[in-house]
Image (cartoon, rainbow, N blue to C red):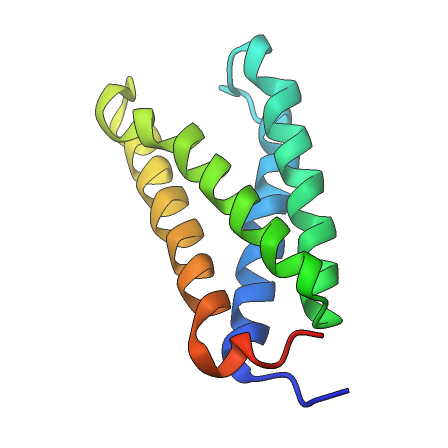
Length: 116
């Protein structure tokens, strides 16, 4: 097993935190509409599974991470423009930027060679 690069560790921690936020979003007082609850929870659980796989440097986890992050970006992007309040707009911005950063950190050339 090769040594885990720092960029992969940072990507795993960010992915775990943002995925945990997805899982806990339905519990917030002004949570998402009921139709989005199951989607957010599925993306959150998938992100946590992906973070665990990336921690173990599995190649399947790299691809799952990319898919989960793209889906999260697509889910959060409308909030950049159509959010009802500034707090929601900031949270959408953090989500889009965070998941984009995870993709960037996961596919950098150095870390990309460490996946088995």
